[in-house]
Length: 221
Image 1: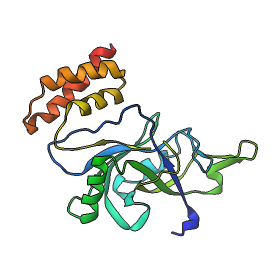
Image 2: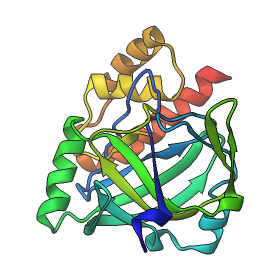
Image 3: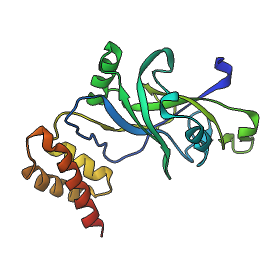
Image 4: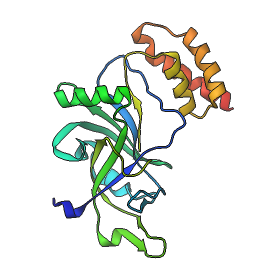
């Protein structure tokens, strides 16, 4: 596959609060948006809803490679799930924690030093339209080849939104609630309440996350 046949789109998800989920196993799991729809990047490209549907349908998640900085000789894990939603291309992946690079990327993601994703794909002439007036290319279909963790996104909009860690503090709870739609003030109050009832035993962590989701549903209704 030649570089001429690959276009790289870098999007970063705009969130008021980033949320880092917890898991009892430090297995390198993460999730986020590799691309967002209807957002013009610095290269004047816009990806439309449905552009990933064929790739998602035709390929198994692990066929889409998970790379570091688009380097084909540096795979860093696997993608477990790919789906389009109204926002964009959402992925769930796992870093290879048995490798040095996987561990390095994981640590950088936990710190927030590496939090952006980008995609590599094949594009045919019939898959896009270019508007000379608007100076933008609108992409309606593409052949997704890989997702990369990158340092500098081309487009300020596709971020890792969840990284599974081994503990959750008040601030992380607050960020999670913000990400699910709460206002900052309500999230802060709710996080304090939840933290007080937080079971410190790691094997209870999933129950805590489920409780948070139930709380959100209650508040929204």
